[in-house]
Image (tube, rainbow, N blue to C red):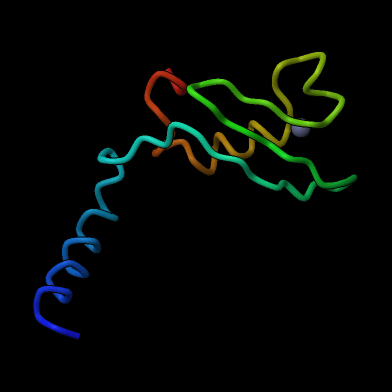
Length: 80
Ligand SMILES: [Zn+2]
């Protein structure tokens, strides 16, 4: 490993401690719930889940669990 790459690794280690630098704007996840697996998406602050509960409530245990997991790095307008 050359010295410039070692510098990048050190910088990445410091950045990883400063989560406010990151705003996730879109992602897709597979969520393995107790009763099945669902595809959950997040796009510009909007959540979507394939489960039946989400259709009626615009939120579900899967999206809420992911909000908790990713709270520090989701785009600011989405967590406000
Ligand atoms: Zn769901």
